[in-house]
Image (tube, rainbow, N blue to C red; front, side, top):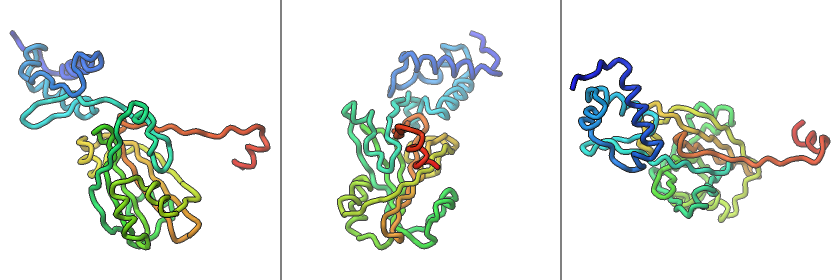
Length: 250
């Protein structure tokens, strides 16, 4: 059977494979047919199939495993409250899925991320804890926390396998104010490794600054999630009249 000229063929092949994923012909977690089989079916070269699969990998539709082939990614998206803890992750709990935390590192570092320049961050070294939060085995958040060196070592140990909000609250630490900055950006190197996503893959980032009654005690954090795995909800208070609203916003 004669091969078709490549040109924009890989885009058409990509769309056909994507359509099969959308219609569940290729199910989540399922291995796709080999590149040779797909090339024969679509009447194109294996190079064209390879280009189509690379595109699908870049946008998070498939993942590749060396020696095993290409697999359809699990496309579930979870929803969490737009707060510091993210412990609600409503859609996960609603479906009875398990939340788990995997500690990746505990170090002492300075905050160097440029986004924190607007957060009045300290210039000294802080405790730095990095961990991966998963739902039912699917990593959905790469979390980095910066905490004061004055914090007891026992609390630092507890932060490795529990949510920071709970561990700190259990030790009597109460936050008075939370400042959040939300943006979208290409995945960091750490997030690429945590989620198995390629360089340039878009992520949802949440930067936070939490303050207490003690001006010397603040917590800073960065949470990264692949754009297609996590969405956030926020509940805003409605005011009974204009005067009440003015007291809060003006």
